[in-house]
Length: 154
Image (cartoon, rainbow, N blue to C red; front, top):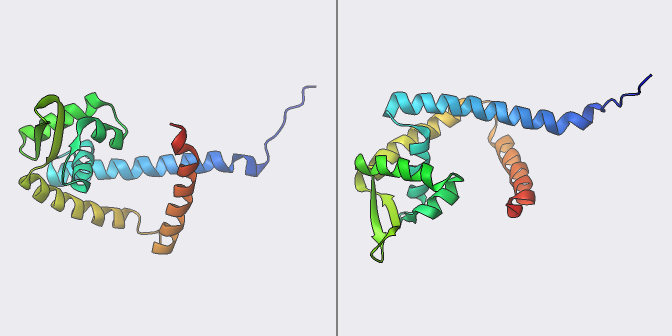
């Protein structure tokens, strides 16, 4: 007879945590995508780019923006091009070098993003309403300490 080691219940706690985090993230993200599309006719990636640019009013280089969002330059370029075409973002060459573009929210982009950000905050409060402020702070601290353990290795 072959002996099979059976994992103790606690041995799978981290796996269950990961699956719960993933499931929760996907559910919230799906809901936010639907609400952004319905209320503003926009996508979550466009919102994310605008949110990043809102944090840096002086603008960001395209490479900095893609690093911040953890996506490829190609993904960011397509989104930025559409935002520029819609008048929500401006793009300017840095020191005359067209390859080093700095992008920033336009005035209309800042106005549009402010409305989206306010709605997003309300939606997050609604979707995570079962989590108390103190629980949210605890979870944020736990996840922050975890992130610091592996983030520098990338």
